[in-house]
Length: 222
Image (tube, rainbow, N blue to C red; front, side, top):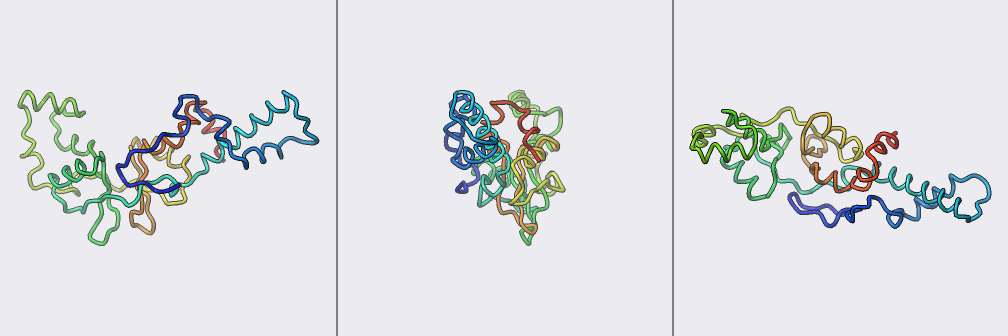
């Protein structure tokens, strides 16, 4: 799978028709492996065909869950330095169309992640969401310029960052997002950011499995 640029919209996802993983999305290898799972001589009866389709479906699910981060990550990645002033961070996020960015030090090593949530936490005053910020601005209850003046990325970023390696499975990426309650995982190699996977990227890749049954994620993980 070719890498996409950060902020780039995905093409139509697997199973986007709303039917989940379909037989047409099972590869020849999935079908071959399914045939090997059926002991003895296989007579193509309706029952055998149904059994074969079910096994091929399971192999396709296993294959998708075993995909690695490097196969779906966005690369190259937009980053900001830890000493970047918050106004410039916000402008960078707006310009690139993302809601969070990895924060790096002077040597390019990742030291944190800064997101919209971090900005909302920085603003405080009961601001918990974008709409509460809009409401506060409309009521002129904010002094945003004063709240961020003189502050830089390191002051509000989430640190240490939750990261994964290029060969991390999609299942493990899913678990990182779920357990830490985050929306993105920078992919690093020797401390340097080489890609990023967002919740949207993962949902796009796992749509067939989620639509079919969330239990498959546990069932097929080994």
